[in-house]
Image (cartoon, one colour):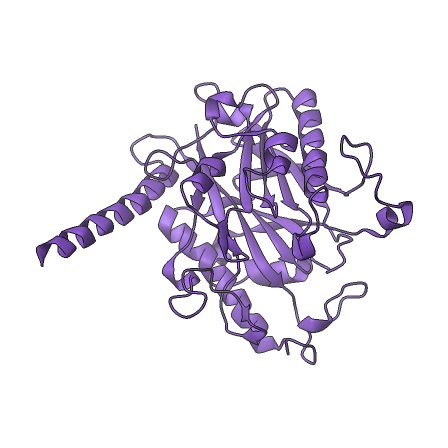
Length: 366
């Protein structure tokens, strides 16, 4: 009967080492230099209880399909804040920058950053109202004492000019298509220039988006290259719910994501979650399969940085440069969906969970 005990103890040690390695990297212990956490979280339909003109938010009203009351909204806010606070507890530091998606408006983010669990971080907000048909946007939360914003822009989705053939689309279909804009925020961290892109690429629902997601990646990549040409040495992070895996063409071909950090040269990007996907990590489940749609990529200037400047760090087992944050309280522990993210609604019923996505993050350090 001793063998199962030994196996259990070994598993405990592995889990402990994963957590401690991430915390050590983020806190910068023993290095004399400060670390910064950069992450992304799909908040899964963070709507308030009021109708916004032009937004398709009717199911998230008190008399809507979800019977979205103030009590449910407050529970959702507390849950989102708890996850952010738990990441801080795990890492020893708050995120410097946290990209978010599936938010209705600035108001829901103002309520979020004011939640008692995270208020001390003093997060500020960059947000633009976008044209998405569902009425959801992306945004950036940041700590103003660490990231100094210089400028920002909301980059619209368009169909041209593109290397992708959209000849099967009519002009009317193109004109009618609405999706999330891409957010770009440029600023400095400890004197070094950074640009953060926050994306929520078109959905897979109904088998759609096979060309739309590559087009979204193409738009983000083109703007990133323009910034690299305008500001040589700028460090760029592209993050978001890509609705694709890091192994899909949108990320490998159109975002130029590379699995090996040494291959991220010139205008190529290092894609740390590509190797993690192959190793079996998941940030969400789609049609019963584990995927990592919550992707973070960094450009060569951050992947292979000169000594003494900010560089991405290995944070899981000293091997992986990204982390999927998935604590037990965020995960279904039993039933049909055991082992998957514990979400807000399940089969149309409010179950008081968190999100259908786990957050992901990276750590940078000089």
